[in-house]
Length: 328
Ligand code: NAP
Picture 1: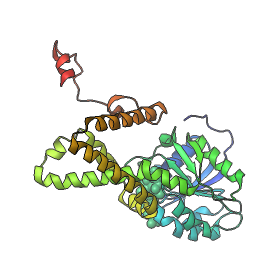
Picture 2 (picture 1 turned 135 degrees about the horizontal axis):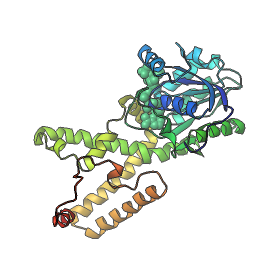
Picture 3 (picture 1 turned 30 degrees about the vertical axis):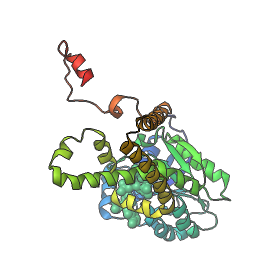
């Protein structure tokens, strides 16, 4: 963690609705940092609620969303974006006066529109998106360090009490995140290109290769140590979550997809015409972007994205083999 745990909690009682990767990571990190006095959690299914008890990551597990939010001064809804409106309707009448209500959805404008009408006067609604995750789901997948050095974007609607925004910012900073504030619409446009479109491309390319695999048999899998392997990791992300993201951020994704298709057409033409300069210039520009991301501390500079290489020989290579390696 970036900061030492607190002596006094920022919030007395945190209610988590949904305890998957994100909800369970918040529970673990909030407890590790002493950010909250107690944690009450709930999930849609009895199986997940039971697992949360077994994992011991909450002080209390409630049977219903309404029961979970009773007396909580911070409520964070950690479920797929398409389900947020219905849950807001359920919890609205049970919120404590002055409670801060937030979410973690990967799309913000649709969540804001779906949840805001159900927030009672006196509750402070501050939507949020921690830009951190893995391809795994469920309460076992979470870990306390998930948000360290990652961004958490808050999108408070106009007129939100600045003190509530600052308290929630402080909570996320305590969990290790860097906090940025922007409008929901701006968030959705930025994330469409940095997150949603890459996922769409990964889902597409893995699907295409799968169809190809019928033709080439196992070769697609056998030689997947190249770029394809990284696409398969992204394409393993939760289908429900990503279905909801594309439905909820339709306009921004379609806008970015239009631009992307234009650029693919440009590169297609360059390849067809043998335009070496156009290809080289383009790849040089993208290489600089990768260096920028590493320089900002958002990824590892280690070769192969920092993956361990357990299968490489531990003994020094025989004389002469090193040169062969380099020219391979
Ligand atoms: P997850 O691991 O699949 O967990 C989802 C949780 O939501 C589970 O507790 C599940 O309950 C509950 N849930 C699912 N459908 C529901 C419904 N219709 N009504 C009520 N509860 C429902 O998902 P996650 O990765 O934590 O994602 C949660 C949210 O975080 C999503 O909005 C996503 O956009 C956002 N987010 C995800 C990532 C990421 O990389 N995964 C990153 C940033 C933000 P059961 O277990 O009982 O089914």
